[in-house]
Image (cartoon, rainbow, N blue to C red; front, side, top):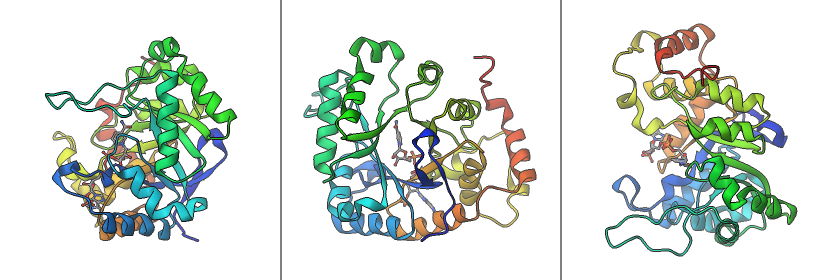
Length: 295
Ligand SMILES: NC(=O)c1ccc[n+]([C@@H]2O[C@H](COP(=O)([O-])OP(=O)(O)OC[C@H]3O[C@@H](n4cnc5c(N)ncnc54)[C@H](OP(=O)(O)O)[C@@H]3O)[C@@H](O)[C@H]2O)c1
């Protein structure tokens, strides 16, 4: 049993590790690198060996779902599996290389889920999130939520979620139907700070992507944090800043590098930043935070 901090994923009642794994990193060609099956399988098993119990992927992430199925489906009871829907299924890029658009019809949502189940060799997905931030109007036109509810009733999925951001996030939270929201949030991009709280207060779990890869390069140029580091690396500081938000359930960080995975586990194991450091870091980026009251 790992000593990674855990918390409840909102109203799902499921306890997740506050450090999750972002499996977009298993996508061949992402960041200009090719992904071989053997190291991908090693890293996925290392993720579970480290005690991480939350994995986020998508039909859009190339071979990611297939690798998850091949590498760890025999350990299925050890992870909460989140994927996405609305992604184009069986459609090619346009002649100019553009990806086909996301489609939120009931038929395409079901096709996405069925494909994910098959690729990941499982009979259920724990969480299916609408991908690409659809508006409430698009969801209503397509009756999209009803299809996820139908899949829930059939036992193929357990919980429903939204990968959203502002401005759509406002109406998505107000719909009151989602068990979890995936939201970007970091020291470099703290815009959604109050909306994470808002989603959490509405009973949803919050799954955060904090873009540690861009690390120090992404930190706002006007703010300096060197005096707050107190001996920790900037990357650890960034990760723990996100984990210091009291309404963040889990933050999904991807890596193909086992040493980086170990670093992330170690950093997350230390928990939030000291209160005074967190408050000061927040103060320095407060100009970027969008108030939920004013929107
Ligand atoms: N719209 C959406 O729903 C959406 C969009 C984007 C992402 N996501 C999800 O969010 C997850 C996170 O994505 P993200 O964009 O926030 O990126 P991220 O996973 O935070 O960053 C990944 C990058 O960070 C590097 N990295 C990780 N740990 C490191 C360490 N300890 N030291 C140095 N480098 C390290 C990785 O390189 P190495 O492999 O070399 O370690 C990789 O380049 C994705 O995997 C995906 O599941 C969802």
